[in-house]
Image 1 (cartoon, rainbow, N blue to C red):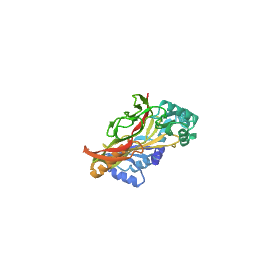
Image 2: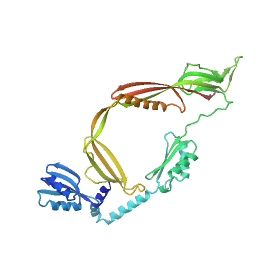
Image 3: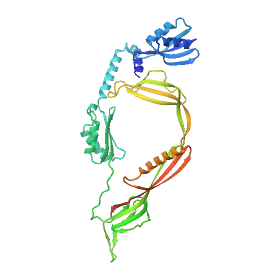
Image 4: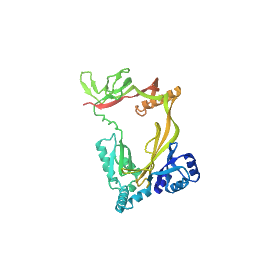
Length: 393
């Protein structure tokens, strides 16, 4: 990467070699210290390559007594750009001023956003107000924002948060929040209430301390059904309302489904690699070579980005894209391992649906295969409290 930057700074030319015995000529040139970049054979009598300006002179000197011709196709690099701009001092001065202005602006926060997928507008507004008090405002210097300390302060000073994170990308500061889970409000013992079901399941046991049970063990209940009523009939036929109290245990089932591959197509690297280097800045792109897209029918692409002026300045970016030629290879997985993997994933999916602290009494696992996939379905059986008081309207 550093050599590519140096190559662009010093300048290079894209040349075409035409003639016979090109392999002999290039081997002789390499043995004398000439470095060819992106050397390609177009035909048995034609090659293209990139070399520096100094090595171009050496190549022409070596080709004097040989039956071949060297043609310059393109010239690239800082020297070429400098020659083009040499007669335009106003353009150079304006470009430098623009670059300095962009670098100066990039030292400050220009936009502040507060995001939270599950947060309501009231919570987002209070977080934004507190963030402004802490100095997260447009115009703040990025160097003065201690994002870890600010995240901790937001967690301490804003009620109703379970998570807060402050991060800065470019000229935008983002405050990401997650609201705390709502805690069921406890009813006063003087308020008449029913006990309602919080789960879909089958009643396992009912212990009523006050109120009248409407269900018995073995009954199927749905979320929201009344389990114990706060309306109690007296011996004289009158009905009074009480604050129902009871322990209701229900058997609840949670399902998890996941897949694992038993037949897959893998990509195996073969053959050479191709590389593209370009400098990106704003809407401008400066190519550092001729390759702009993958020359292979099937390839794996990896991209790296390097800030030439440092990550803090966010200036020009050197983008290096590497294409590795690959071929497809079909592989078959071990069936027993696939069963274990699919079952583990399905159990995790079931656990994600359970309340915290719930103990699983039994697991039921089944498998189904097809289309190169093994599908595991698990059903977890739990025993849990399923009653919640609800005030009688």
